[in-house]
Image (cartoon, rainbow, N blue to C red):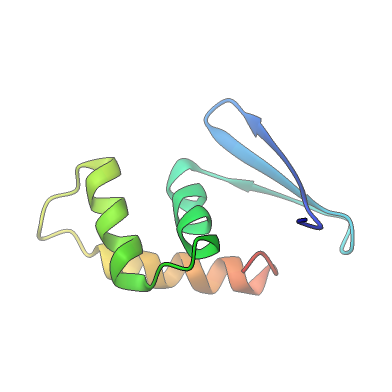
Length: 79
């Protein structure tokens, strides 16, 4: 069971971390990265999911965005 309280607020996901008494708001892209990581997917698989979900062109730097999102999620303790 997750120690976080999660609730959709419009298209965003509100995540409350009671251990830090902090609220984080994740946009749909960050939500997808979090979901994929929780499923055990690696960066390449997350990038493929992002490209498919958001119909990103092949020249879009999706892996850099995935890596940045993972760093940000790790910094706030969500992954």
